[in-house]
Image (cartoon, rainbow over all chains, first blue to last red; front, side, top):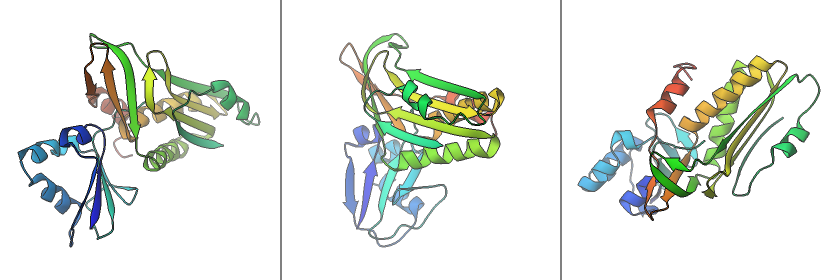
Length: 82
Length: 152
């Protein structure tokens, strides 16, 4: 299992804050592809321009990274602080 | 000395200034961001700010490190508030101390530009008419960051 957390407008548009899914193997790009394939709403919500960064186990990643069972992944939309 | 705080409570710039080392410090520059009453034409009731505990702090630390690599700054303190904030309330403080004013000015501006486009914070606006919406990232903020370099 892996845990996925959603932030900002993604939480509202997907109507989910976090979930756990079964994950055998694959990298962060595979995970995004898997989530986008759920249906058109997920595909639209997780369009490239709506994703700023992925975080694995509380570390921001800057390139596609392997995801292992037990990992916590967070999907961050573009940021608007300051 | 460097510090990063994410908090719901208001902050005091005076308290932070008292902590600054006087030794070899010739300039202090501070920036405070406050909640605007209007976004475009719709009157705002309040702003909600979300962050990602521990990841947001890490990212701000990285931004301060980038500034330290470029300018000789002695001290930098960043405080960012989260939760519900009313119009006129202070959201963010960046306070930088350096030997010379140019370094303090530029580092403060650099940190703010990066904070706006890299640090995991998300604003949601709640309007007086009862509607709400997540703030969209602005291209202008990305442009401001981009002017420092394309390599950071």
